[in-house]
Length: 228
Image 1 (tube, helix red, strand yellow):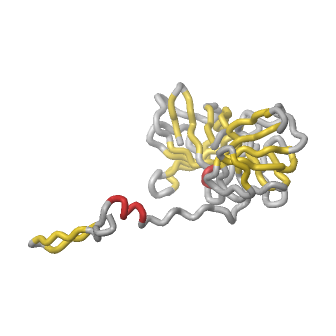
Image 2 (image 1 turned 120 degrees about the vertical axis):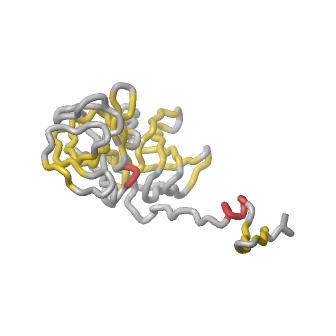
Image 3 (image 1 turned 30 degrees about the vertical axis):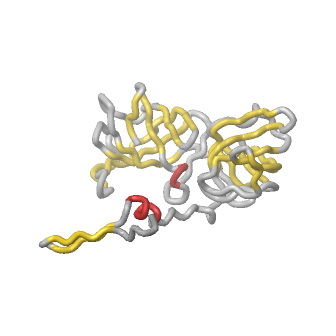
């Protein structure tokens, strides 16, 4: 309706103007894609396609992928060349953050890589295995107390791996971040803490400030989300 220029209402307390919902949505600027950061692509699945070969599939979180890229898959530390990239069954010459892609790689068996691994550019800050890491954890729903040694499952990007709370470093205020207690003996529902986590298997975790999609996680136990 090109003739519609918005609406005006006159009231005693003052006039008001507005636009349609579609016009308001069209005026929103899309968020900037993090194309300037190093490539990070958590694998969702890996397929073996006849006549093509091994095709990993996933969503690009940061960076850019192009054919010819020498990619590294962590934590397996496998390096190979990207031969081609497809998106929605069409070959593309470049893929950016937010794109769900499948890409063909050279000389790598479908058994060597799997869901939960992270693909990066071998020549630009490739992803690496985290043997342990410190994390801010907010306990949402746990029936008892969480002590050092607690081993729930961590869901981080596409990885699903058991992690042990090896050490409770600090209890903090969940809103301000102020330290309430050093080396607490336990934490419970409603508490926030800084803890050292040790994955039971090789895993890629990144700093939230650098790569937010790879620094967010959910702690799962007893078929429910215990902490984030």
